[in-house]
Amino acid sequence: MPHVIVKLYAGRSDEQKQRIADEVTKALMTAAGSSEGSISVAIEDVAPSAWTASVYEPDIVAKPETIFKKPGYAPA
Picture 1 (tube, rainbow, N blue to C red):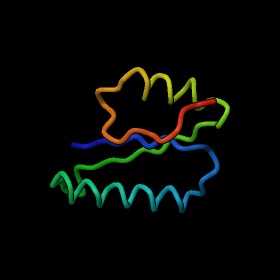
Picture 2: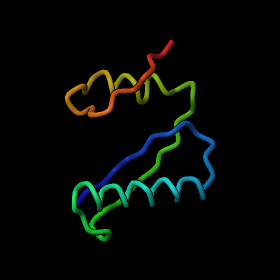
Picture 3: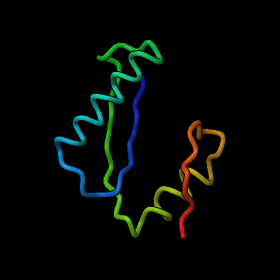
Picture 4: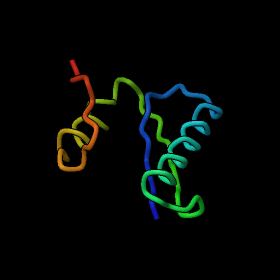
């Protein structure tokens, strides 16, 4: 039962978010062998000014053991 939460800078359209959800679903079906009906995808908008405190520090820096693709940036 994969559930994926995608956090993005705010500003994407609902159509873009749906395409992201569709592609994430396809990737999980292919890579993990999950059935489409077992996958859920949430998309959370994050204000750019809140990114470091809301995402980078708690989700990336504080949980390095969960990061399988590291970002190529560091907050300023």
